[in-house]
Length: 274
Figure: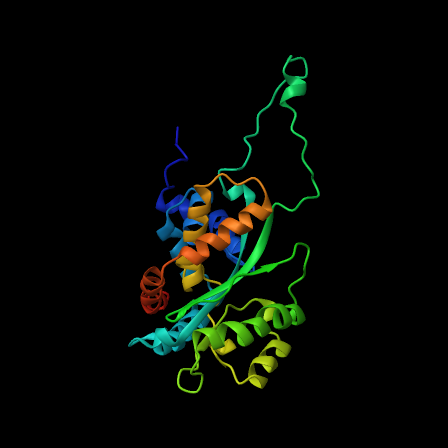
């Protein structure tokens, strides 16, 4: 009998159903990492990478955009960028999650074992952040049940970023204007958002240079979010407020030396997506 704890064979892994599942998982605003996709489908990470690279309609677009972005990043030019992204953080991504067990009503311990839970309480939140060779942005938390449209993104994310983060990280703005990098989420690529960036004279990666939906190519995806989630997974966390406080603590504690190493890998990551 085949043990599904091992990666499937090459032929099985490239089956149409596996390819379909991989493409469905990356066709979202906040796609999981290749490692997470591979683990959930019981295939190797290299298989996931090949499926994404060979996904028909995206091949030509990926090659074109990868080359443009790569040329902007090489020879140390990645140090001019601020790489930003959003990600979800959940309580069940920590050791604070209660185990689920099943018990018969006839068991004498039944009443004692029942845990009351507020089903309306959100179990996670979305957070925005960014890194650069000059340091980190502040983290910005998105309130639950909030739709991140262009107006929200401009007023709650971009304006504070441009008014607070950029002047703090780049005090001499005339000589060291950073290049703003974001992904291609709908609120990021809208005409309203682009017009706002142009109005504020922000140097940014143009829409035609943004990478199509490929996990593990941008710094926040291939390193930073995963690093923070691993740190939080080691802690026992019971509430969203506690999760937020612990996340802020880990963000503040993250050293610039680590960020520099992450950013230095960026050009190579883009190159291997060609």
